[in-house]
Amino acid sequence: MELETTQHIKQSISVALVPTPGMGHVIPLVELAKRLVLQHNFHVTFIIPNDGSPMQPRKQVLESLPPTSISTIFLPPVSFDDLPDHEDVSIEVRITLTLTRSLSALRETLNNLTTDQSTRLVALVVDLFGLEAFTVAREFGVPLYVFFSTTAMDLSLVFHLPELDHKFTCDFKDLPEPVQLPGCVPICGPDLEDCLQERNNETYQSIIHLAKQYPLAAGILVNSFMDLEPGAFKALMKSRESSFRLPPVYPVGPLILTGSINESDRTDCLKWLDDQPNGSVLFVCFGSGGSLSQKQLNELALGLEMSGQRFLWVVKCPDEKATNATYFGVHGMKEDNPFDYLPKGFLDRTKGVGLVVPSWAPQIQVLSHGSTGGFLSHCGWNSVLESIVHGVPIIAWPLYAEQKMNAVLLTDDLKVARRVKVNEDGLVGREEVATYARGLIQGEDGKLLRDKMRVLKDAAANALSPDGFSTKSLANVAQKWKNLENDTN
Ligand code: UDP
Image (cartoon, rainbow, N blue to C red):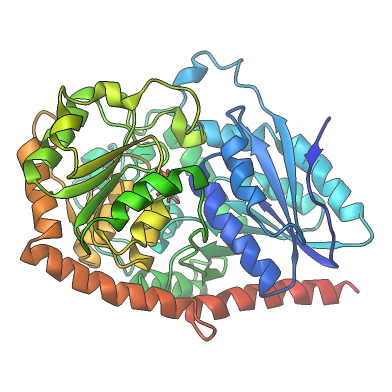
């Protein structure tokens, strides 16, 4: 087996991090790695399973890390050629299979790391799809931790899934009443994760199987913070004292990437923002993989135009599926020109008022720019955290995965977002788009949401301050790992 290895400078105590495919999984783990190194003096080894999609975007993010104390090992690509319609497998199944098919390479890597005399591996940290690595971790006597890159509410759902699966016989989309997870706002069946909507499919079964393995973890680090989800966190922590025993849960967020992802995008759209009035621009972006149908793309374009508001829109080629290959980090690859799919004359008519960027923009820099006054977002959890950290209110337009649950949290609980309504044709109409855009940037409603978002922004900064809850929580985990090291010396 050939492994590609970059920087490998070792310290005495090391932690291995395993992000499954998807930029949204890599990015927060990169930030976690920085903290483990800078605040707690660990050596971190990234072990990257490879689903065969281009590694360049992941490499780019990993290369932005400080070169000392962080190593990266890329596992060999897995193949999906044996699957009957491998182009059609869901993202969840593809991600899970990538890990299971990488287990022997992971075993070999852990063998090398644990026999290396100059370092001691004290934890293997996988992401929310990585529980299959448990048996391999156990073989080497290394505790397995999960970095849960979304909400405490979603984690609570994972713990309750086996019970809900048992209790109901209908599809979750047809649940007779909303699900009431402890400490959370009620969630209607259709708003639960996409992959759970229908029982009779492979994805549902694989998620139930995954959920049943969560209690095996030695601990779960959640990329959220106590003041954001106090009810869910307290319930998760309290349940450890009851018969419903869970691994310890640690809020460690909001961890968002610091620095720019793509320097070449910086100039154009950030310069354009420099010339716009304060708080006047609606940023429109559906994450790394969110796609709209051609009809929906038209409605969105015409709605933005109709609103008369300034906007910065990251436009992707239309796709009838809500996610496309860009989810796995294919942005920047040669693809059709997304501008070819915009309504005729749209670019000319909106010139000066709007800026349209193909495929990718430096989102964090955009959200931190003073001219940005609102975010029309697909509610991927990284995007939500980035918006909170920068105090930008949201128009919630969830598309796939757990994004509808995130939208419920933002609208019904935190009240920092308005959620779009989908009409009987399955579309968000242009008039509605215009109303949401105006309301958020100029309306009283937008002002209310912005005020609430500012409170969360302060709470987010507080969570990561030297005495903040998330900082202390990560320090607790780090101390546990260091104690493990001492136990064996
Ligand atoms: N992102 C970006 N520019 C884009 C699209 C996405 O920088 O044009 C980043 C965004 O800042 C976030 C991540 O990609 O950190 C997307 O993660 P998220 O969880 O929001 O959504 P996903 O892509 O996983 O659906």
